[in-house]
Image 1: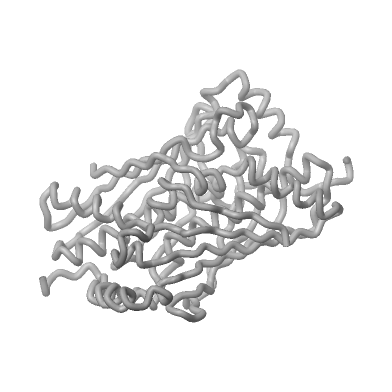
Image 2 (image 1 turned 90 degrees about the horizontal axis):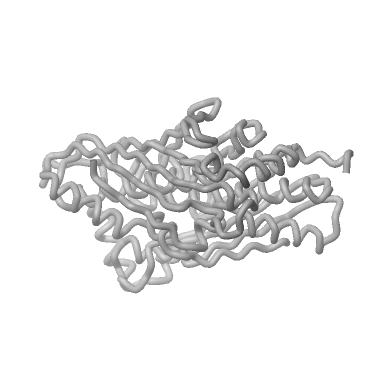
Length: 182
Length: 182
């Protein structure tokens, strides 16, 4: 086990699990983003501060994301589309999970690649057919993993990552979203 | 109407709606992302190509996103967390909708700002309590909009944006996500 290093501090996570068992209030995080409309369907979204472990926290740096629609939607393509950001979250969440579970199971990873495809019938958002949903019809993630492990062990890594993934849960199960005007 | 300009080509969208009524196959889009594990829970996700209108398409440029966990999770904070990317998508999708609906209704926007907060009990992902879900408990979006319109008209803009939002739908309703190992 000692020679396995995927760069994940599993001990810190296991310690956090023990601490949070007795301190559920410290486990309440609030993640935040603030958005500014630029022009057309182009906006920028800034992320830095969040709340957790009972106090205000911050990422080391502020990150600004740009979202727009592509030119085939008669827009200026100043960034990826909003719905593509969901794929970024999904791929990175499952990948982080694979690395963490592999570390915990003593499996050395050499490479983890994935592709994500989201099928989207845009008749929903355009209001062509009210029976077509606005979001993705379905999403498929395909992993290519090179590791010191059997195919079965690699499949088990991915299955466990999925079981603990925040973003997989957020996409496959409903969440209450309230939208207000200040 | 002619003096209103929010930068959205509403006529192109209305034309697309008419064309896609008779060509549902052209409305089938596939959005794609590819992810590469870096180290620990740090990964990069690349977006450029997609499929739609019956053929391969591409954004003008390739965009690479970085995702990681913050230092309070014993990670290196090389990017925002995967679950924060969902907030980027939600804020930008609703903002694009506000701009589009305002253009269609002849309402001149001056500024559209929003804040998004996602409450997340991290006992789920850490496996502290199996009754706690992995994803967000709930998400709240608050808009601040300056426009040539009454409070009621602005609230109606936001409501209509929500009704047509791809990301709002993807978060509030379940989507089938399949995860495979190649």
